[in-house]
Length: 228
Image (cartoon, rainbow, N blue to C red; front, side, top):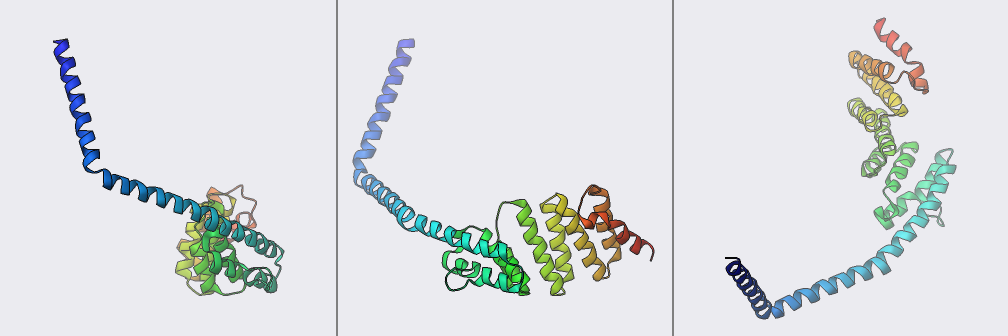
């Protein structure tokens, strides 16, 4: 019995090998063409990445470093305008986005949005900040909060409340208390005092140890509404 099973297995293997050889023989030209296409595509991708994409990325990052230096030194609208638009020698974030896009890193959209906010160009700031897709939660939360600040300045209080809530939930750290306070202030401005009170109480209950002024002074916000 064991000998028969071995013979059957040997025959099955031989048959499979034979079918495989027949397949390659019948489709040799097609298979060689496919292999050639794969090799050419691989070589083209390597050349593109090595000689076109990678140098562009390095060039974009070098320009980013200079624009970031201008951003860090910005103290007023003139400084933010320089960081955003450059000076003819050093590119600004706006030009870097136009020329390199995300090759400079997604943070370029964050910086451009903050600059536009400080220049009071709120619609453009929101556009840039929404394009920021960074994975750093604290920066992502900051971008959402800045969108909320823009919406407040545009009298879109409903949108602002939503943005501040998202910012608080995105980065559950000491900054969350500040974002919740902003949500409460926006809710008060919109006439929804019950909702505002819920935000203020959330700050008091969930972030009692926060060192932010918003958390230390939260009782006055709560008392003001409860006294009415």
